[in-house]
Each structure stands twice: as structure tokens, then as C-alpha cells.
Length: 459
Image (cartoon, rainbow, N blue to C red; front, side, top):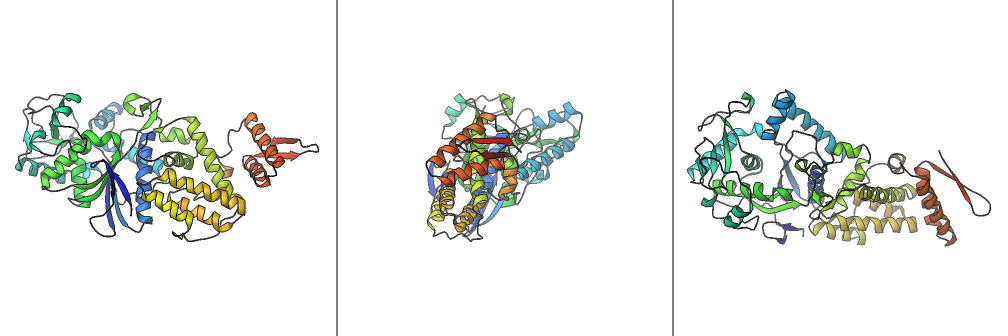
């Protein structure tokens, strides 16, 4: 039984899909006005891992991750560049796909663009007005009347009065309450024609929150299983989605809400607005993409993830260890027997709120066993279980020839030679051989001399 930490209930719950054997999941995707950064990478990798495990557990999964291709930032950036909205968004959608493919992320089953679903947004706004939950403000925008929806604040766990006191909300002319949010923005004269659609309330464009409510409804139905995204979306975006969707349809919207933790830099959330972000592309210039994927998965998805070169170096070394095992002990072709002890522990970890960190620890137990016993079946199981997480899917030599040993300093090499000498003195010849192989894979050739000394050179 899979258990999921449900943000809405604030505890772990047994996962029971609405339809037996089938899971419908929606994840808020990127606003495409710039290159994706490591915070975006975490969202994409985490929910790729979630969908991979749901499928490995035997479910048929329909996974939707949207693209926000109309937004104030997009309009401003296109104007600054002197290009069309479509040219800008197409370019960054293509870049996002390149980055996600490099990280081993499988394409979602559906990847709707907001601009292609405006009619369904207009229909939902009309229903909210008819249900007494939306109104036309004095400036022509259509707004959601937050105080008319009894359940507002359930996801964030705050009352309306607490939210009003704690949030910075622009007070727009004609709003009935500062917390009310925009569903439809009336057209501004200075905005290009390509961001204006006709409606019964005049020309304009959708607000951000209504986009996800309408797209998820159109592709997954009015009520579905899992909705995910970054922790920063819990309020106001996901809170507003609940208000819109349940207000329009009069019944539950989503059963399980999942939020991944922030990527942090020096204790602060990584964000473009803070200027402390690292783009995926810049990171991939230095680190192998699989190292970056491992870095994201080696922590539990709900925990904070601190970005640093030291962390990435540790993850590179850890992944190198696993690949060295597969290099030294050629894996046999095996099917996963979930009753086998290691596989059962792996499954238990993943069933416990997708605990990839604990699942990865099982991989290292298998690695040690394979190295100790030279058992090719253990190596084969290591590879198959790692593959469930999208790891260890390359030939070991390909990884080891690439980035694994790049950048070893003379001091690093001397330290590993000293460790190898200590292993030989302790008669731990398997470890000594492993260190020699690691250095060889990094392009370092060792020559043992009489008297117990070792000379080395770069190949």
C-alpha cells in the first residue's frame, strides 16, 4: 500500500485512487519566459520519480504537467526583446524540453499550453459568476469573491483574517475584498493583440490561477487523484485552484495534494526574483546530468535541498561508486523479485511517501554485497532497482569515461593512493582494486614499485 503525505490533511494517508488501477495526476509546470533553474529541475525530477514509481507499482498513470505561456512576465520579456509572445515561449519551451531530457525526465502524457485552453477557462469563469462566487470589478476585471467560498484557507491552514493580515495584496479598484483574486484581466491598450481574447466581459486574458483549474478539468476531469507542485504554490495558487474548481462544480477537486521542498542557496529559496538561481544549463556545463538527477533524488522530496558544489561533488562520488560496482561486477539480466530482501526494502521505502533517499541507501547495500561476493545477480538487481528511479541506465564505461573522474587534483589522487595502500595493508584487496579501477576510469595510471611505493601519471 502506497502512503502519501497529503498537504491538505497534513498527514500520511493510504493512497486509494478514484478508479482501481488508474491514477490521474496534475503538476503545475513552468512559466516559460526564461531558462529553467534548479528549483524547476527539482519539481520535474520529483514528479517524474513519483509517476515512475506509480507505474512500477502497477498503476496506469495519466500525467499532466502544464505550460504557462501567457503571464505578465512573459508579456514584459517579449516587449523587452522586441519579439512576439509565441516566438519567446516556443524558444523557452524547446529549452525546457532539452533540459528535462538531459535529466532523464520522461515526457508527461499531456503538456497543455494555457493559450490553447482559453474557451474552457471562460466557461469556468461564467459558472463561478452564475454560482455567486465571482463578479466584475470596477476596472473591468473579473474577480473571485473569496469570502463567498466557505472552504477557503483549508490548504494553507489559515483563516481568512490571518491570510488578510499576513499577505501583501494589491488593493485593486472595485475589489470587494483585498484577498479577492483576478480570474479575467480586461485588455490593456498597451498589450499586444496576441494576448487578447474576446469574452462576454470584454476583451482580455485569463488570470494565472484559472488556467490550471480549467486545464486539469479538461484533461483529467472535475475530480482526480493527485495534484502536485513546489511548496511555494501551496498559497495562493493551489488554494485558489481549490476555490475555483470546487466553487464551479460543487464537489471535491483533488484527493491528495503533494508539494516538494525548496532548493535553497545559503538558507534562502532559490528563485529568479531573488537573483540567487542557477540555471540547469549552467549546472550541466560542470556536472553530468545524472549526477544532478541523483542530487535531487538523494534527499526526500519534501525536505529542503541545499544547493552547493560540495553537495554535488559528494553525489558525483556516490554515483561513481555505484557505476564502479557495475563495471567491476558485470550485471546479469534479472527481473525484479519484490519478495527478495533488498527489493522488498526498496519497495517499502518508495511506498512510504516516495522516500527515494531511503531507497537509494538500499542500492548501496546491494553495491557492497555485489562487490564482496562478485555476484552478478546482485549487480543486476542493483541496476534494475536504480532504473526505477531513472539512474544507472548507461553503460558503466560510458559514465566512468565521462565526468566521474574529471577535475581530480594531485592532492585527490595522492589521497586515493594512500587509501589504496592502507586497504592493501589491511588485506582488503577488493577495496584496493576498486580504488585502482576508479583512478583508471578517471584517466590516472598507477605503477606499483618495489618497496611498496606507487607512482602515477595522467593518461
